[in-house]
Length: 142
Image 1: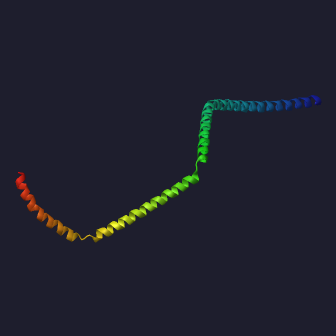
Image 2 (image 1 turned 45 degrees about the vertical axis):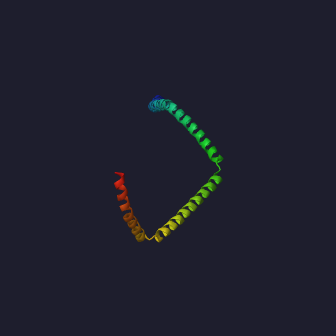
């Protein structure tokens, strides 16, 4: 009997272990199912995003081509010559400004030498002489 009791006890332990393994297996299967669903959702999302990624890639390739073209055009520019031309132009503008300033000074000096009081007096005298002549010739013109 004792042998039967030990066998029975051993069988009960095996059954308990089997039930525990079944529970863990069911839990593992549940996690695997959830993981599989997430993988399917991720694949669907990737499939939806793939055309957008391809479009962006095409745009980036076009942009890269444009950048390469611009870089080659910039490399072909004679920046030293352009800088020298700009310096010469700035020098010419400076000379033009200096010449204009000198001319303005000369003009102001000449204006300062004019006696405006005498000029006004001469204009008034001329008007006094011309007015009677205008009146005289005005009588014949009517």
